[in-house]
Length: 448
Image 1 (tube, rainbow, N blue to C red):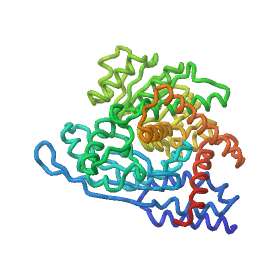
Image 2 (image 1 turned 90 degrees about the vertical axis):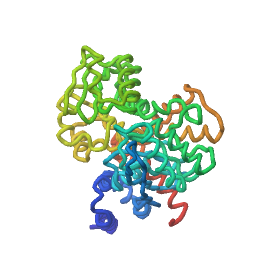
Image 3 (image 1 turned 90 degrees about the horizontal axis):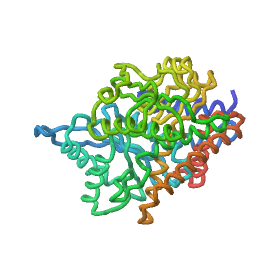
Image 4 (image 1 turned 180 degrees about the vertical axis):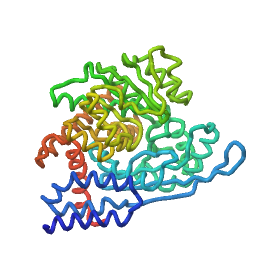
């Protein structure tokens, strides 16, 4: 074994021994490590940068006490992992979900490092959230939780320090409550959150950005293969913000979105969703906040499949847009057997490493999350720029910038893969391109 190979093995062992219980974080690191091995073999100095990168610059865990509508005290746990500031202020969303723990937040922050780097914007990486579940809670309870959460978090964030945004279960309502509490305790009106309402500093296209961006990425990958989205039947998981706008943009570009899902099951429109039907899904999930099964009362052609995933539906392309590890090896094999030739990740790490192996063995086009779903944070970066200018750009200007950024991400990922003789392995190329920009910056800034 060469000296470089021994060092690589030693670093991998050290990561696993330090945080053996953090399965999501270790999964994310393993996926990246495999892709970067050719980089380390060519220039071992990058391995030292990686060894620093996998240890967050700061990990903040705090108590979040609040009073529910019955006057009963509730206590949740809050997190903020500030992973890397090599490229700019920490930047990444907040997730409110019962499954949130330190491992989940670290994996999200680690993935965010590469994603933000790929956008070419000046953003570092972080992620945060809580094990609080807003589902079934009144607006007053959600406000009480958000105010308590921000009362601690505010001292660790700021427009030039750390700029959070939304993620799962953190939408416009939650961002509003969080911003209001920050403004009250900090006595400062500044762009320290993105995903804000348009009337107080938000950006046009921000709600649509992750879904639209994922479709733009798929469009560029298909063009590289001499294909287009026209007429492609698209299987989508999830029914939140990302899934909704993925479906909308697919429809606009001539594709046929055929499914939405939630944790209880999926709904299938055999002829594809129309814009009117997508709008109804948006009302159900964003306004009424009910399960996707309620959609069938609106449509005579829809079929609902309780307790099942949408991957059993035949299609041409898949857009997993729900949550991490929603596609395992068995699901991936079903997708391939049903004719899917491309998987583009709208959610963060929705495919297990075993599922990704199935894609590669079957020559399925694969758009990894850190590249394909970078549109959300890209437009967050554009929102930060607008806040700094005290201006609001037009919808057309923001959408044009988003489409350009997603095209650049695809082309940079492809170029990096080819530079290391990995053909068109976009997964490896995205990891390499994202890492090199961060690593070079870390090396320039010294051992800090």
